[in-house]
Length: 319
Image (cartoon, rainbow, N blue to C red):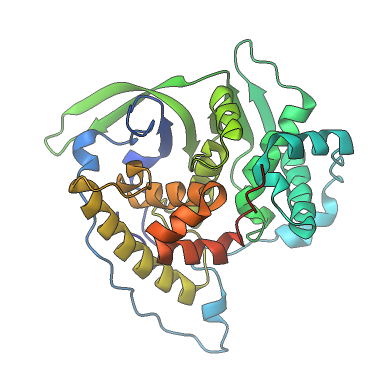
């Protein structure tokens, strides 16, 4: 599926979940769909023309996403429990991406993380034990991509599942001949369009220890959640219509060029897993926005510019 200039495309059944794999020696990631399906590259998209119904407001509305009555019902919510300073400061100490934010954005992130902890259940699996400070850290990392988008990015799901380490999932794919293929993957993250977000705690910690390497599984999976908000996980999040058309055109051009480089064996500096599908290109590029923004700007300047507009400036890379 190409990058969408319109948010009306239906979600492909083969991509109900996006996974972040630990089995690929080159990139530590494999696609959700069967290898044969992943080989096809989408054709370039020509942004579709849209008509305005008048009033001058259509181009300012998110395509495919209309908030319901949430704002009218906010007063019915019980107040979230504030994050204690001790736990917030611990999260800042452990995550360079959080320390690199200015005071205003850090305060905004704390508000979002407070809402996250109020609305989501964090479920450790097996013998994993998470402390209160660990939950605050996970909430803050999940909310990094939402500092400009806002708390609407938390809608549509209610649970964060955390495994001690990489975990196994069963995948299936029906090929064009009607043959069902089933296989197991060892993954470090997974995001269902309307289900839980799942992470490997060991990999979260490993990436925190190397914050400049271009990897952040939490951001990667949260971006899939954002991507799915308009009804299609296609590499284009809910955006004002005019910007969505620009995004689709620029991302498609950059994606096609990137795929050609990967197919030719060219070293791009960006994880080649980004070539698997438009939604993975968006998610991987977002990881680099937060953890290696200079590399992203050099390799994919048009993409980097859109992500700066969407997420705000990347954190200053403090130690």
